Image 1 (cartoon, rainbow, N blue to C red):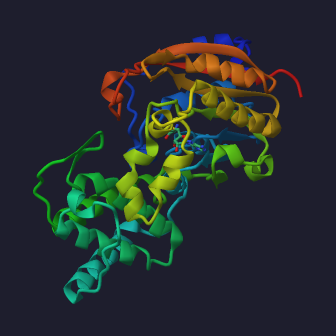
Image 2 (image 1 turned 90 degrees about the horizontal axis):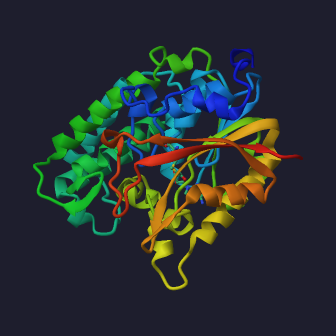
Amino acid sequence: MTKHAELDTPESRLASIAWDFEEARTNTGPHRIHPYPARFIPQIPRSLIELFHPGDDSAVLDPFCGSGTTLVEASFHGIPAVGIDLHPLAILISRVKTTPLKRSIRSAAESVVRKARNRIADGKYTIPEIPRLDHWFQKDVQVALASLIQEIDRVSDEDLANAMKVALSSIIVRVSNQDSDTRYAAVEKDLSKETVFNGFERAVSITGEAVERPNGDLFTAPARVHLVHRDIMDVEPEEVGEDVGLVITSPPYPNAYEYWLYHKYRMYWLGMDPIAVRDSEIGARPHYFKKNHQTEHDFERQMGRCFWLLRRVMRKGAHACFVVGRSIIHGREIDNEALLERAASSHGFKKVGSIQRNIARKRKSFNLSHGTINREGIVVFALRHR
Ligand SMILES: C[S@@+](CC[C@H](N)C(=O)[O-])C[C@H]1O[C@@H](n2cnc3c(N)ncnc32)[C@H](O)[C@@H]1O
């Protein structure tokens, strides 16, 4: 890497960046099409790619890709990317963010809305069976969402249909009775079918601006993006399908964020199963509040399985960058970085650099129910030997 010839250690490369990015614009292009808890600000994977990708044709892997921030940034650099996540909505969002649309999503959506209105006029819609639906969604909203989903399901261009699903998903909390993305209380809201149709069309516009050709600068030379919708505990090396030159990820922390809960009703409306996600989600709170509950040792074992996989797919000399914060289990503060280091070490990795960064308050997209995480570490590992 000639660009960093003068910076010859991972530690000094890390030290060359001001990681807080306090004034940076973080919600631009594909990154703004859908909310996601604890997602990266794009500047983090972008800087890590610039510092640590070997500059050859090897891929960037994010084994907990969430909403695909790493994958989008790899694509911006023309680098192939692989994303793994257990969450079906995470995979859908990642797919949409990295798939250039060849046709106008706005005109396709206009037609979907027109047909959805006709469905309502003819009474030809089916409200899906969703737990506590009437508590969270007003009748008119249910009717509008159900008819839109039925029409989106009839769109034959899969890329367009996926992009419309993500646009619709992005407005679900807004058109529900839920107070906000981070407050799970039902409140009175003034909503109608038109709120849903107008919200959907606005969301489609934002999606179109981000991923329609020729607008997205992402798509001048689109790179390969491979998505694996699986529990990390079950992924086999062959499924990664690329030679990996760099890993960038932020793993789920024990007892901190709840990805299944945050997107529960979005998933129900899209025909996905949030309960299945909860059961396999690493770190989900229910695992820490039941009889024989999980402990931080389970987290170490789960991260160990991740490093087992990384060891088998990473190129010699490649780096793995983990962004990780602290969490609290039953009142005890857990040093996830130390657990991660132990898991890495037992699979032949050593820590070659780390840095702490402040998370800007205004950017936190999710209020933690307890504990405050306002600093996180970026830890860089390298394989000790093969
Ligand atoms: C911190 S988030 C990643 C956010 C991502 N960096 C972004 O920018 O959107 C962690 C992710 O780990 C995923 N996850 C949790 N348990 C998993 C498991 N067992 N297998 C695969 N992914 C899992 C969650 O669904 C979540 O998307």
